[in-house]
Length: 376
Length: 253
Image (cartoon, rainbow over all chains, first blue to last red; front, side, top):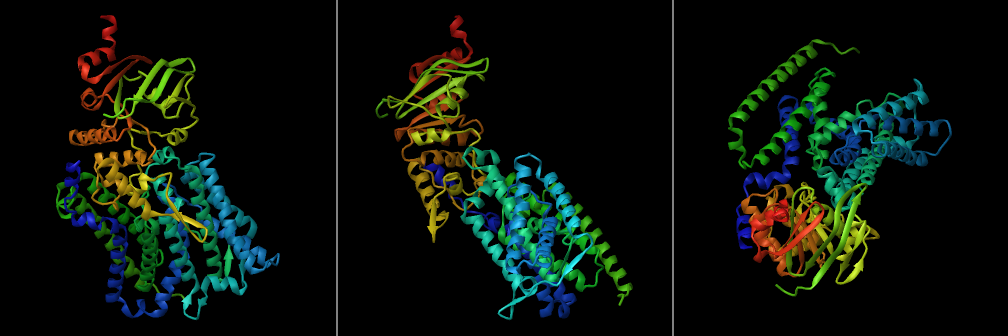
């Protein structure tokens, strides 16, 4: 048996040693890039305390959902219904308070439970009726949004009890923004769920190798349902936080929650192909997207460019992770030598061209934005 | 080799799937500290026989005895409780989990804190290192990497360790353990099997590779069209004879 041992004592290369941290290094590098860029271009306005507070508040809204989405995506699932779940839970909560006089404490708990119930429905549709998650949650997105519209019509429900605005935009002990505390707490909870519980362990196993999970006695469907219930509950919480933040809610609230959250999670290194999860990465991803969108606003780039930027960031990160994974399957351990193979030089050239085109478009965007005048 | 007492014996096993007779009156006997190889063409009934032995299927008729006591199994986990486990060709490993997590997948060790039970990663890791070292003589370079970064032989070692982790394991069934491995990894896997034999396990290996069979097995059981064609002591036979039995040439001759 000594031959097995000796061959394993070969020294690990740098690439192997940083590999476990790769997921977090990517978004961190991008965060520093944005921070560095803004430090040169607009330091005064971007790094103002009030602006940093805005970034944190914006990202806090997405943290609970990013936490839950990490589990869903790790299991090779996806949930496109979270925006509607958030809106519908928030609307029902709003009606309970405004029309039926429920105390805020109970309504708040009900909002999260309603979200969990909608998540349970999603999970059952996917596991019992065998509807693929993409179609199932897309269809349920329509259903929940429809119910929200039926209930609220065009109404904007506003002015809520203090508890709800406290959750959405309050300050704990005068200086800690409450939503940020909630968001970070859910992420920490998510980290423990991922590393210390059956649910986390089995989520990775299910995403990594569903057949193996089944063969070793893991209740695959049950744990998939758990993930959707958690997702729904966190979407309900986000709906509640959004309502508190704006002190108003309507049926069309939270339209792009799904793509924003999926983008944050994927940018953070959780693999869409399952099995690879990073809670810290999801946190970094949420922060990165909020920083980027805020940077675009600070640079006075037209609002609609945000959508372009989000899309580009998703493509870049998924492509990078895909390439890195292909590399270690080829067995070439050194990053630099892998980069100089003819195939990859071609790939790099293509990437360079596409990035150049995008930056050209972005530059045009800034030019147009300076021409436009703010309308009052 | 230690004692040759039969650990497990299957007698007169017959299995029908609807109108198809997969097994017809098959016997099997596995002894402690011995490797029994089962060979045969595709569809000869090897896998069906093994699935009956590991509790996945129930035989239509026939009896299985463990240490002379008749037993009945309703599921694979019953078999594991009785000390019979299998390592499948696909290994059933979740590539993104580390080796310790794979070793304990489905039966994790836990700790409890204020009534809240959570996974005890530290003990699972220590126990994995111990099982790999003591039972298989394998030390992995790192217990923190994903299992996908291990070599084929090391992954096999992890899968085997999952079975031998149970101290009361008596019978280990291996389905095509070397089918996906290169020559070097094959040699390592075969030496793992020898180590297990020395520890007094009854090892049953299904293989298509007669070279491997002749290297590790003590007895060879040949199956053909759902029947047991014969059992030979490996030392007293040749691959020519076994091959003839597999294709049915000796019957006509």
